[in-house]
Image 1 (cartoon, rainbow, N blue to C red):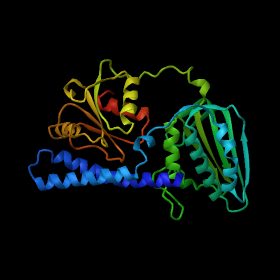
Image 2: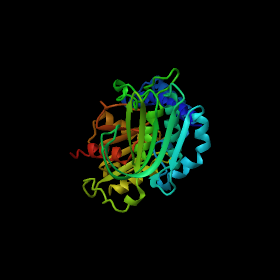
Image 3: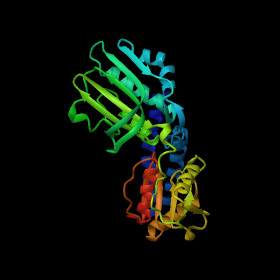
Image 4: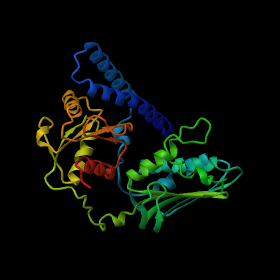
Length: 343
């Protein structure tokens, strides 16, 4: 199931490259009178949209997690049999005491755990040992993927092995999209682990030597949720956004993020009253495309945040800021601040 899910997402990524290029052509040629070009672009958009509907589970399901307070020891204990089959010829040791509460998505925790255990098995050159531990721990370390200082109490999932280790020169690449050392591998396992862990508000560390590797997943301790002060994102009061999003769950997610930032919304047809536009590139909305096209071609002062499935980079067509799925609230905030020119 996990392999099929990742394969579909990878295929969807390839399709969104075509979708992104087609979208930019549509913006550039918004006012063209060449019917042949207009028809070809429309055909491309329809074909890509159809293909993505077939392959996509849901782009927005991948862009968020169903976080709630859960006992993360529970899935570890329940999956003992499955993990034992994965480990097969190695010794498996599980130490997970019930009651380790965290803010997390149990489905994603299970996927992360399977991924780490499979990687550990593949690192063993001989009959070895794999340990899985779940505990609450007072931490003082640095996240291996984002550099954040991880300090205080966290719920921690630790997977260790006594395999051959990761060469030092490869440590900085293992979480990158597409990086793999496996024959026939896609380089998605640790990339997805990184994304999903961060979407749950967590962090990752990895330590390795020639005698073994240890991955740690740090998840928000449920006891810290009410104790931590509310973040001030420094967004001036009274800002408003016009939102164009489809019926794929994106609208609700965007509106939740905007509400947390105390940013109001205006009717999609009243863009002149907005300070910026948020546009889900998957939304089948001709009015939205027309607005984005005008902003691009006329270098309109109204900034646009364009949400896509694939990294496009900086736009040369006006004040457009691309935000790539999956993203968390911090990435959304950063893009909003950039669009509003808040330093």
